Image 1 (spheres, rainbow, N blue to C red):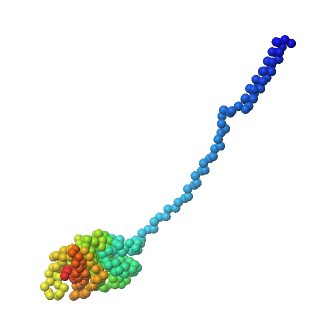
Image 2: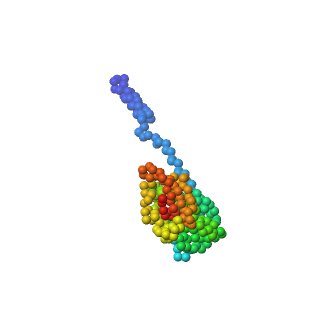
Image 3: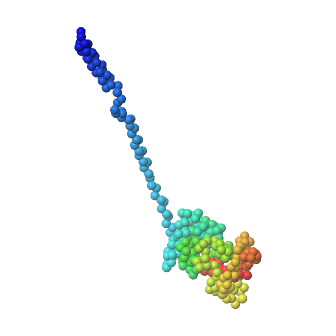
Length: 276
């Protein structure tokens, strides 16, 4: 065969080889699309636990007998009695007008107190009182005016229910004011009078020539007090309602002297009338 015959045989072979190459590339070439990524579904949120709201316990309604013409007395003593029943631990701090030990003792029998308060109240000259079951609950007018009346609780029929402890505590409160550290920020002479008003002649010696209480005339006789010794206080009866409290008092110069404070019973309990 000549040259044309050999070229004719080679051409089909080349075509076959080229075709095979094309077929190979179509099977082993780099893919143009990535396979879809695996997907993980987020867990469904857990169902919220049902909540139960417990309603607050109702505040017991303390029954306080009416006082004709003086509803403020009823409201003021009810505020105190409600605390006594529901929050007794808060009462001592609120009843700072009474000696702490005395208040704890007088307020111990809650049932007797509530029984007395349920009776009609009597509006007396200086105090409002409720009596029942052998117990009397008495509140002073200064306590009523405060809106939270801390009472004296005593056996029914007791006339002189103020004690030497009341007198000593009145002196403590007065000296605390004078030293700049009152037992409570609200304890002022305007709101809670401690100086005798002088409604009757001041006459602890019984001379018959009494006048106005000396401390009413000079209320600053103990000004400059820096300290006093409550533990060293002593109370001595003088005459009738008069009582004398002796107490060591230190002044701004650092000198300590024992002072004699004479008290009597006034509209707000024991009041101070004279200092020697």
